[in-house]
Image (cartoon, rainbow, N blue to C red; front, top):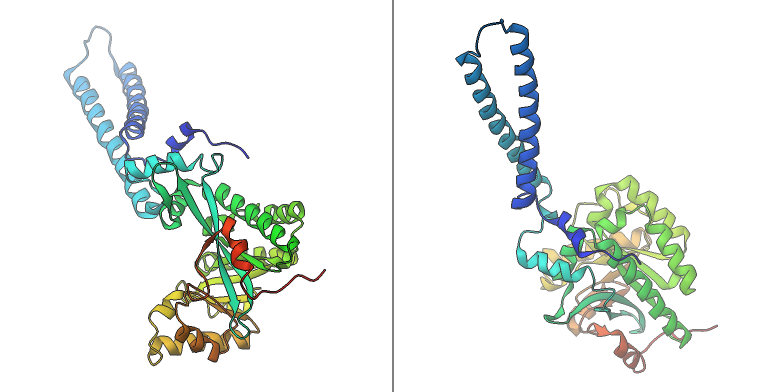
Length: 357
C-alpha cells in the first residue's frame, strides 16, 4: 500500500491559509500588472515623440494600473474563496486540531492503529445469528480510542477514505474467512462511503479481495447509503449491477433518512433495506413513526427485499418489528460492537448458522 507523506497533507489546507492565500494573490497581481505594463509600454512607444519627456498623465496612468491590479487581484481571490466556502465547505479542514488529527490519521494503517469491531445481526424469527456489521475504531497512541464519527469525516474531507475503506473491506473479508474455516457461516457487512462508492476502482478492488481471501461472495454484504445512491442514480445502478455480478449482497443503509428514493427504489438492484435507528429511537408504537416503519417494511416485502432494522435496544422494540415481519435486527439488545479478538468468544455462546461443507 502506498504511503502518504506528511508533506502531502498541505494540499488539504483551505485556501484561506496565509501561505497559499498570499501566493495566489501575488501571482494574480503579478500577471495583471505584467499585462498592463506591456500595454502601457507599447502605447508609450507608439505615441512617444522624440525630445518630449514622460508626461505626468502617463505616470498617473501607471499608478492607477497598479492600484487597479491590486483591486482586481483581491476581488478574484475573494470570489474564489466565496465559491469554495459555499460549494466545498464540507471538504475544508477548519482547525489546527483537525489538521493535527489528520496528520496522525494518514499513517494510522501503517502503524496498525485502526481496529475492527463487529456488531452481531440476528434473524428476528429464529434469533439465530446470521451476520455482523464491521465498525471502525482508531486506537490513537495518545488520545485513546477514537470513534468513527470523529475521524471518518476527516478521512472523507482529505481523500484518505479510499485507502481506509479498501483496508476495511480487506480486513473484514480476511476475518470472516477465518470464521468460516472455524465453522461460522456469517455475512460480514461493510459500509461504503459516498466518496468510496464513486471510485471507478471499487468493483475491481472488491473482486480482487474476494479472489485473494477466497471468501464466498455471498458472505460479504456492502452497505451503501441512500444519499450515495441518489446523487447519480444511473451511475449507482450501473455500479450495483457490476457488484451483484460478483455474487455479493447489497443493502440500502439508513433508509428513510436521506433523499427520497421511493420513485427509484424498484430500479435499484439491491437485496436488503436497512431501516435507520432513528425510527426505533422515536418509536412509541402509536405515532406516525410507527406507521412509517410499517409502510417501509410493507414496501420492502412487495419488492421482495429483505428488511433489517438497526438500533434495537430492548425486547419491546424487537417484538414490535418481529410482528411487522421484519427479517433481521441489530442493536445493543442483540449485541454490542465487539473487538475482533473477542468476537469468536461471543460466537461460541450464540445461536448461529453452522457451516456445512
